[in-house]
Length: 444
Image (tube, helix red, strand yellow):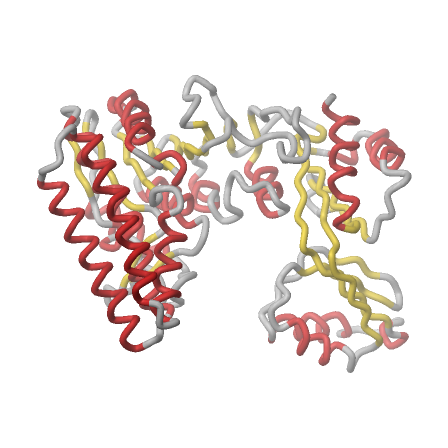
């Protein structure tokens, strides 16, 4: 069987949903399970509704809800070529449920994370209802599932953690793929053990797809989006960035972590554990093969560049580090207490530098770090990463990188222990030029 995941831009309207159904129809012999996001912009609209209602602007929220309602009803009419239908009634019922939630938020002037998840879950429930109806109108055998019955999470609402073992068990017990039958489920949403609706956070739809794929031992997970695959650089910075045909799991994970937005950093983990290839493809250009992410790649050298801005560099200077043990563990314990993730680390005998991209709680953490030495904080930094296999086995690699960037002041340099990632820290104002320069050196 195969899992097909479609993002919001792929199901933005009736025309694009029909493209999705064209792709799904071609895969019917492979027993497809289709996982969909909400229509483009709908999740943001639902969040805006909840926020407006909590701030006492209930009328604004209801006006936005009406606009969303009209959009889905119009899509339904275009898909089914008629206005009155069972699907139309089901859509109206879901919209009515959202309206009641918004009115409740307006009354209490509060939207808890649990309530927010209940509100935003309707985006995926609406889109999959439309996709299922469109499939049936074409004569496709369709089964629509509710992902909340299968995806079990903890109760960290708005960013819940999937409990994989019970989730896999529920999926295997409740879903059986069949050739020539299109199974449909929602991405992004799940439920706690008590049946309370939860969401997996941004990027959760991709994660949902690989969860279903891992549970059902899929031969492939395809992530359909609005680009041809993973590119050698951000096309907004490098206009001639080219498509990468094949990446290994570690290479894709590094690119995702360091700024490539095509796949979410956690998306491929269930696939990695089960050895399932993940292919990134373009819904608008299905004839393109896309980028295949698999266990291993035989290609050596730089495969792609990625950047991440909004980085803060924290450096702690202390003579107490000299020939001391336990010093670094005490420093990192501070970051752990304040739930701050550290990305890159560089050390010397009397200093340690770290990069973080989460400014929440940074002030109090720095206050504690000052107990261990003088603290220097540099904001508006960026990470530029070169990702590929066996980078340092090419004697000319280092020379080419640093010769190309001779005029760019570098703040930190880090080579991952896996030997697939060289990361450079520099100011945000320099990183776009540096990416274009390195892309010219290695790809043009």
